[in-house]
Image 1 (spheres, one colour):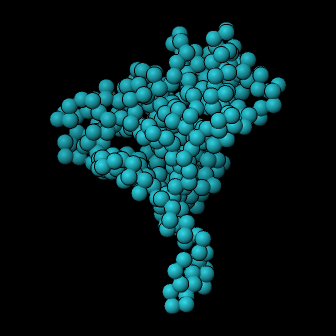
Image 2 (image 1 turned 90 degrees about the vertical axis):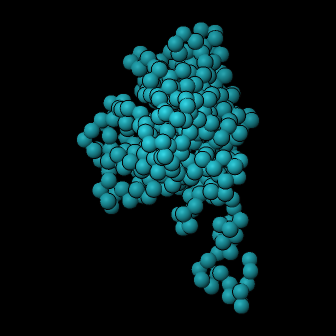
Length: 350
């Protein structure tokens, strides 16, 4: 650390280590510019996404003093009660992506119909599906929540407005995915299909700083299973058998009820996250385009496995599911190879 005219950072309440960390660590903006490999439009999109995450983090931080907790008095496209912060987060995401000038179609959990950018001068090649505030049912009790997104490059002619068919495609055609988590810290985890990268927001300078490349522990990590056992009686027998086995083989149960939080912990610590289909919700409850696909892409890129379990008569990768409509759902079984393959083996032997 330079010493200017005898003055030291510590004289001004600044720790040299902190300054060094902030100056020398790669920022998300740098990562985007480098990793998009000259694709200016993709860089603009990812910068719009990081901006939306920062604005949402700020709104959530001020939710209590600004009376932003509680219900907005409406339901969203999938029948869930909408919170005030759901509406704020949705507005932030929609406006940020529209103003980027590189999107042609947006799908939000909070919007019943897709948003199609009609103006040729204000649209680009990307279709983005997003849940602007995942886990918002927990927001009033200060539990970690987040935003999730997936990105497609349109296939139709750029000379006309996009159609819903540009985004109703299997997850293996996604070109990018990620999520932001708003908790004790604000983090952003992203993938372009070549590894998973984790960033944390330094509020003092307003930048996401690189933390690490995320990879599942090779041995499967901690023995943790995460699911809503209140639905146990309605699950397929292989899922019931797996959970029963976990209880007798030293596994710990951890379940937040916010997909972002549960998947984030699973990525970092290992184990398995399950939200299977049941007798009441035969397709499961989590949405394909903006929950299943992005989290499955991230899981696989981190070295894990993401499966639907038995779905539509077969066991398949989540990324191979063909969505039938923009708010379609699918069962979720994702985590380290050790545990997910154990579930799939139970299906094979059933």
